[in-house]
Length: 555
Image (cartoon, rainbow, N blue to C red; front, side):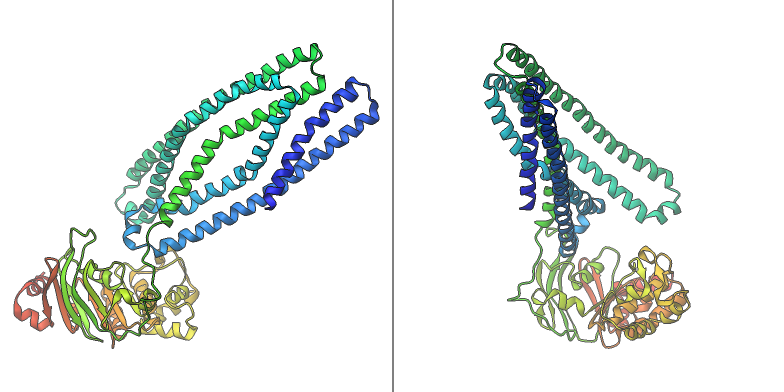
């Protein structure tokens, strides 16, 4: 409400100045009113000018605060939404595109609030009263002035679709540049390893060049469009000066009224020119709102308080004829039917692409089964509170992700309220305490993005400590010991033995020898469970597992 009041005050003070200027010319300069009268009018003009400056400052500050708040709220909503969206949606979008939704699009909205919204109603208010005053001063001259206005409006409306198209193209190219940049920075080690710096520079040069060319065409359009608008309005001013001068000569207008009319005309054309930029500003705003709305309107599986409930997991897992495909018409897993007892360790075996990782993705509830059911202790997983379920789930993946921050922050990530003693106990169980203490800053050692300052084995042990901290009831190990040296693997195997004790565990491992201690092995082949049993039972079958195992030990 305060912003609207300030807009009206700014408009009123702007419209009063030409009236005072008219009296200054007619009553003082032409009528010989004397210095005292001139000073009175000059003081009025000075006071109005100061008032305009003060009101505009207050108006800009209020709009800046409003724009910053709206922008911050939208960034927060988008960030929350990203975390609620299914992993399939995130995987289908480019990282740079998702990043630009939070950074660039919210920035455009803030800029619109600060640069356009704070002036919008003041401009409309001034525009309406400006037209009325011009008609009251001299109706014929006002009609002559308005002749050029329809041409300006026609041009603005005629190019509206063009403006919308060119800005959408610019946003799309900006997304491509951002995504390419993020890919190269994230994969810099691979780029350098293969000596592809020049190739990536050339690829980025092409994308950056396309973006620059799109920007150039956009700015060229405005470089032509705006001068044409200015020329049409300039002709309107020339018309006012010419015919207004004739009216002064024949005595139907006073010099002060002509000066007042010219001032109102300049105001009119100034705000028409301001409005001619509105398609550009509105297109940026609308495009940004559409891109943000594209994220916010995505459907999320919200928990229904009437159906979804918390449970204390005991550890019985049942795949009841479960079928799933990332594309519903192309199943990755078909008719999976198995029951895992509480505390049982299941090794998942199979060739690449058979669906091993898909199985654990279902267990992590990153995806939901298409047909059949996945039961936890006899309860459909869809009816269990997502927060409750994941708080009792521990995951150690092949590619360990550590956040930029300290070691203690990374371990505490799974349990933010964990005490220092709990963190040290988890680190000791993960065989991580000793190497952490040998670091310069111990648990307060800062690790770079993805934990780049630590070795692979050290990162893995921190990830295990993070999993141990929550004392999970269900445990998922996805190639947790692959790509490690013998010493690191031994340390991690010892840590995993402590971690898996008494917990229902699903483990994927490339080296089948690491799964021999599993209670049962599940062989996935042809998108189904082809074999299931102990290590000895499957060897005796001399089937798929036998071939995989003998191929490894003879390699």
